[in-house]
Image (cartoon, rainbow, N blue to C red; front, side, top):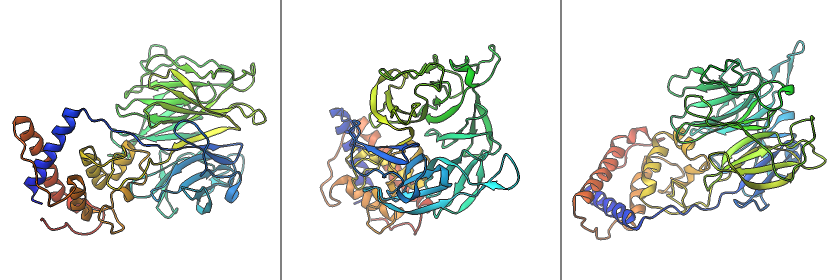
Length: 442
């Protein structure tokens, strides 16, 4: 098929979808919840129904599940805090595969020598490398795709908490649980700056946040972070038992929201009743918050659902020993479905291009699509690379030899021009692909 024909076809397809008001039909993505006290990973459907495929208690020596994520290979990776390891499990069955990495030991803060690392939050980058928050150390650790230590970023933290990658620019936001500070690591300059000091004591400061309700436990303790597509940052405050929303300048939006799950007992002036630990977006756009609870014996751990204004929507899951980490599995796999809506159409074009040229930013914008290397391998050569461009074009058109409708009108001409520019640009940027040389023009 000629480029001009493809451009006309994409313009016609875009126009038809605009007229029909077509919207993505999001497919199911399961929710994985790491259980700190239960030493397991529980799995739920997107409606909160328990399902199979989680990680059983103690499997592979799992001890204190403080982080969970999906790898680019579709397997489950879990931080085993008390063993200093990242463990790998089958993404469908939850069966133990092996130790992916043992983190370097940390200096002993109470004397000479070293102590085992304490891995917590973990996320894969687009090249298959892994970032891990070491809550027993002072930084985020960077491991290569084979689990080997590369180096540290966001150094000098007092007690590293969770972190998140911005879908806006790929920057990493890291929480210092012990100091109450959120740092911003620039993907462009590879430098670190303070994004927000949650314990700023100057009421006249634009970044001032009122003290939390549990001041007897100290200041604010950011544990989990989430960044939306506008650059707003959502924060779980473990000891103050609250949720915060900060705008892209680090200024509080609205008021802190106290986590008060209906029906959950409040133990007076003991540990906070819910203790929010981690946070993520659900497939429907709502926010899911994992709460540790306060008693393993009473199984008071929960996952609560909020809208993006942090209004409580209800319990997603409860009766968990201690929810410490939460993530989503990829939705149903469809070859070429690069935006994860369950079908292949022109909504996938920009996602396909971004995944090929900037996989880190693609994953930041599509955190559940960790299987993008499989989705994009339209050529079937076992790689996602520039050789998938032509097969993807053919997949969009249905048949490369089919007659192409001739659109008309100024709007269609504009749409065709945009589509043609995308195809031409993809060809020019083929050198940015992962492997191989540019395929020949048809």
